[in-house]
Image (tube, rainbow, N blue to C red; front, side, top):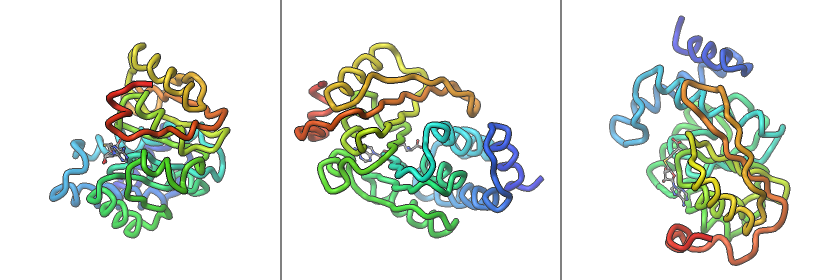
Length: 232
Ligand code: SAH
């Protein structure tokens, strides 16, 4: 079995349909990431199985909660997770990958050109993007390994349309983190979190989902130092 077939099997085992041609794109993604990672630190996971399961398969966890043709923002995309695997498996979504790091964005631009995946790469900070023209313009914001929940709520909810969802990929968030996230969400136009345990991938994965039901007050998001230092 070659690499593309192996990736297709892993993705199908987790319940998603994938064409052979998309498997080739994932294989190229893995090779390009591995090669690029030798000079620019993008991921601590470097073995083939780790990349397939902990990056590719894990990234797909939010797909069942992402409607057809949704405008999706990957907040703090890094090496493309979870947004790029989501887009490869579900080409109907419109993906924007946001990252504050120029190096990460350079990688994302090179990657998307190389494997032929349509995505907008946006270099910037989420709290600044959330005060600009992209405020209230996404149906879904996904985010993995970026910050604690209350910070994610303030970074992510302003970017959502009313009716949209912020989906945070978490391991096992503790009750304190969830309570602080819920407090922040309710001040930002969101509901208390819905927690979904997923069976996708090898590790315990909890998706923490905030639905946006009203507009975010214009004073949010604040500057990053305020967001982290002065909890809502
Ligand atoms: N989501 C990827 C990367 C996680 S590392 C993964 O799961 O593998 C966190 C990334 O978020 C980094 O690339 C960092 O540059 C970016 N980041 C952190 N704070 C940010 C902010 N306020 N706005 C935009 N990007 C941010």
